[in-house]
Amino acid sequence: MNTLHLSVREIQASDIPLITHYWLTAEPDFLLGMGVDLDKMPQEHEWHTMLTEQLATPHPHKMSWCIVWLINGVPAGHSNINKIIPGEEAYMHLHLWHTTTRQQGTGVGLVRLTLPYFFDTYGLQRLYCQPYVHNAAPNSTLRKVGFEFVRQEITTPGWLNFEQPVNLWVMTRERFLQLYDA
Image (cartoon, rainbow, N blue to C red; front, side):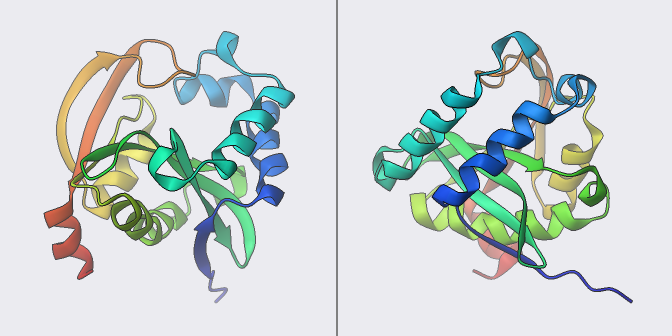
């Protein structure tokens, strides 16, 4: 049996082309299935500028922060938070870059490894996620990881999205500590 080794780390400069490639080469149907407004997609240089600025900004002042997911030591996806209010809350996003690594159960393990980074680095009390209602994979992953369903609502969940129905999920610090004995 082939066992996958999952690990996570903070974004590095060498990850910028990988993240940019993910966004710019994804099939339009895949992006629409995540709730992405294709007309809002930044150009390559804009992605590079945003991610470079993220790397250069100290943690308390970041508008977004990215954790890179590795499968067998190879970068394979990322999770980022934005709408960060240190000591209070942030909103999480989940992205596996390759079709071969999706729907294999790796997302659950990778999110579990990522949660301590978000909770500990920013002292979060609540971590939210708002996946598109029609995007089954992240909704299933969040449930399996232990996020609690709050409600379904119609919103524009991020700067790259169109208005859409989303499921709002939350992981509180208390629940995180209980589930992950952190």
